[in-house]
Length: 633
Image (cartoon, rainbow, N blue to C red; front, side, top):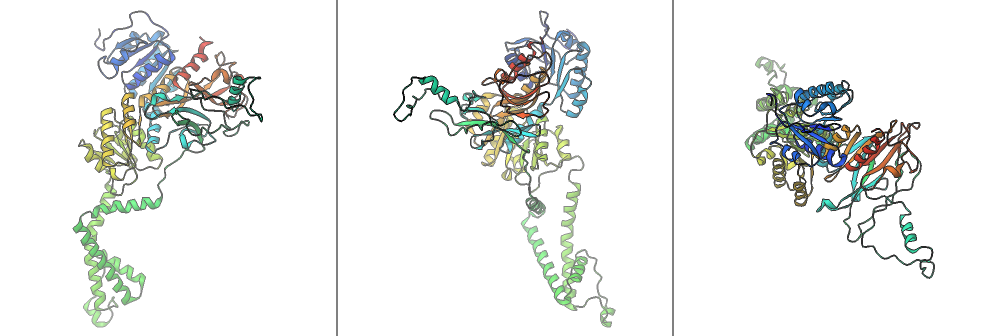
């Protein structure tokens, strides 16, 4: 026992293992990925066995040991056998703490693979250069696109070579899709979904008929074979591969069509967008919102009556001046001076001599007096508006949403994920209003710099949502770190605005299933569920370009390079692909240079330098990783 920490080091010497530092939700999901899909020994370093997800982690059967230390010190690294470990994942703590731990681990084991969580991605890229074999990932940056896209009612996308891959469902599936990625989708029972179902070509039905009837099968009169008996188990959907851009010609994939009897009709397909869709707000709507925002100074009925009366008097006086002088430019000039209280009155001596400035006589003087008095009424209001505009966002205080805020997304919680989601929506041109109860939250300064309004305070959600203009919002995204708080915000939002779309951050799968069954026009996402596969793949040396959500399931888009000595050498698409696991969607050969989507030659074998892009489940990508390293091991 030491002053820095305590724990139970592995009883038996251990080597070739992976170390996960952290006891949060991401650490929990990451350990599950490693022990269930990659089947590697894992040692977990936690700050407290009794807090967060540490008790659940300790119960996992594939965990070799759980070691307790208050921080990742030199002694803690020696306790988890850093010198013989193959990989280290730092998924908890501040950026500074993770950088220090990564550098210390490299000193103990120069060849170890290090993956560390960094909120500051620019800093993480620079730290990667200091490590021999390291990668910096941001869990919030990985998950934020899924939350932002769900708020807008469309799936998120992953960019590959200038193309944006996204998941389309049911009627949104078009003929130029790449492949079907899921079928048998039942939103009332998410466990029935099949990811990457078995792929069949156009001739699959003919092959089945030939196998059933054979050369001597019965033939109906007129050369028509009898209809085959219906199968008790519905056949998987036909799925040949289409052409998607510059590639050798390939036949189009038949449409999934309507659902068959007894089969859930939901399907999902991987499709390509030429450009990332944006959500711009036209200038007319923005101008209308600005005018409505200005009207917040006139919310009092008595104030509106006074100002409207003054405005009518000014217009009437302006009409009198123009009628008497018949000079529109001069009338505007003298009216503005009178409003500002800067007009020069006529002198009695000038009037007697007939040289006065006014040419309209008595009625012109009356009109000028009316305009001047009304100007006294308008001046304080104009001053208040100018002070509000110039002073908004100063003194370190975030700006409140104005009365003209419309068609916006409310983001509840300005932690790492909330800040990323708000920033991404703002970049896409979507109006955003944030809600945060902690005045010290790190995201407040970031969104304030972008001019995003923030509702502060720890009052009831009903009151806070009213201030956030819930009645006029399009969606609410609740991404605080507590499932109960997120659910409370979503239910309160739906009560205040039955039409609003709600997106909730939930960790528990059972909780999410009940959420889907209870609410319409709603979605749930798990940050750890979206980010953990990318962290696990990076720990194994694989590059995951992004994750796509198929409801509560995750599809990984990964890019693999065939290196010398890799087990991928000599394999073709038949060897790589398997139902429910892996689908090869693009190939770049070492001497070709151009990425070819859905390369039709399924027998061509991979050579060193070739690259493949795959859509894979978590277990499928783990299998590919095993194949890739088996020859090297």
